[in-house]
Image (cartoon, rainbow over all chains, first blue to last red; front, side):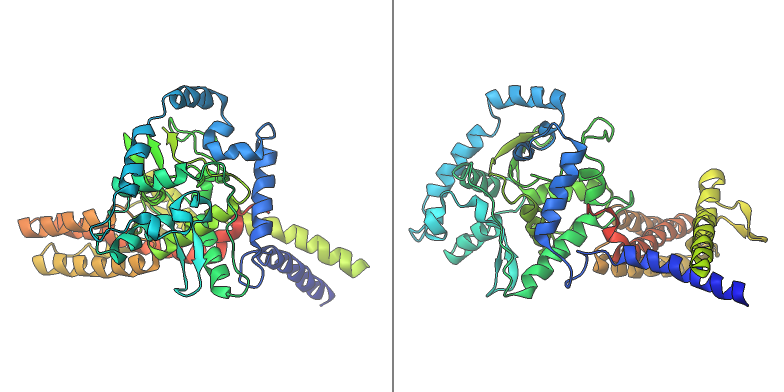
Length: 288
Length: 141
């Protein structure tokens, strides 16, 4: 009887230790702490790649892989996105049919503001992205919205990022609206949840899998992921938005992607950009 | 003190045992991967066949009605996983191929493709359920 009792206590200890692990902090509305998440992510990469400077993570894989960096630096001597930025500037400054323009829709005339996106909009109760507000600006002025992934929207966004280079991301999660924290937590959960036929999460490639080959590719680190968007990808041969890249990643893991600018993709962008707080805008970027 | 030591020893003894026991799913997947479908294997003294439940379901007479019923079930299951946000990329095309096979009168092919699509959807739902309680496991602390 005594043995059974002791065994029961033992099993209890074993189960309690498992439950204690499962109840670790940061996974529920009660415990999630974005700043602790950001520091934990930075510390993770500092341990993985002690030679890399945190501020250099804006350069993605080129922060941690010297060979890739050498190739990229040569590409950057004649940036492939240069003409698209010029076209974006022209588009940005071309008035709508009603005589107004993008500058009328944004703070500071739309110049040097990329680092403020995405943000939590309390009135609408949702995360707003830069591309979303570009299209809302168009619609508010009687213009057709642009397609989300590439083309003019990417060019305009690239120009706006260009004017914001070196501005520091400081995404806010307002404490007076729990829905903002819920959106952040949803984005975090999305990032770490496995999905698709290959059973991969974003984190499998961009946290644990950073700089580990997937065939011929080296996945970039999650830290600094969003700072250089939109990007000119050699594979695309043109500029594309962050949500276009989200779609591509999902397809790569054989998961059916959400539509660009779907709420969960915006929550993901909110989480990812918060993780890059303290880093500077360096979009548009050039990637393989 | 003695009780605590015994309890701790019991915990340490039992934990590896919990971890080492092969679950039915693990045994099934291992045998399916090694021997393909239709292989008989033993688990905890009983015999099982490496067939997915959808393959058993599709093992019916190859008729238009059966094929259509299987496609409808696969579509319903895929709708369910899509609503959870865990739909797989290829399932929609597999369903289209199943419908094309049905239209061409190749009912066996239609049944098999619908079974595959329904399996994708079911595993996607399982993936969602797993994610709900395990997503945090790879978060850096």
